[in-house]
Length: 223
Image (cartoon, rainbow, N blue to C red; front, side, top):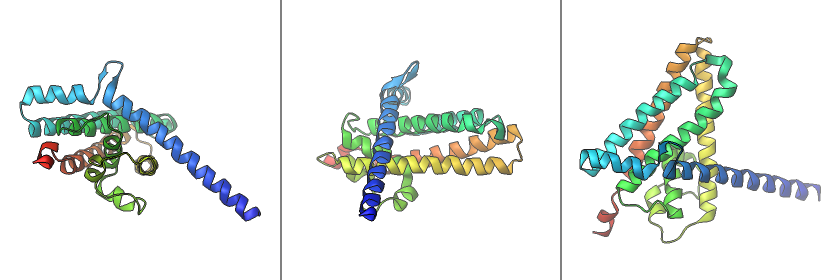
């Protein structure tokens, strides 16, 4: 009886954690797609790049380049204080990076003709944050191709929860790795900022290139 109670409690705890992760990621998606304060959303940002370059692939490259630079800047600033400021800088860095990378991926999807209001497309955007390596480590029931999910005829809530949980773990692991790298800098603040910039820029580049490869143009799929 006690074992059954423990199993039920553990299952309930996992479900609550997964639901919480889903809530956090849904908010990140809203901020990334719709924008906030004076920060433009994914559609607006992508549209500006397309208007400037006049060509979808060029706009995507410009979009990725912009977000790599932005990620590096915020990674530098949020880790500039070194080890002493880590308890404050890690949460803000984690949120900022998630919103930034999601906006970039959503912008790529928008330029390629995907409807960002569709729930299955939003799940696919989150999958792109994991990249090929992250998806390979995800639950066995999770598809390895965001394209498959983005073009699915219906939304799968269970898959969405699994992906949200995996993304939270992915970002937490990245920030934990950055914390370890900062420890190696022996509390030198400016070097810590450089480490943060390098890690965030690299991760953003990986996410952008994976999304560009996975989210092929919808018109090509129909053709």
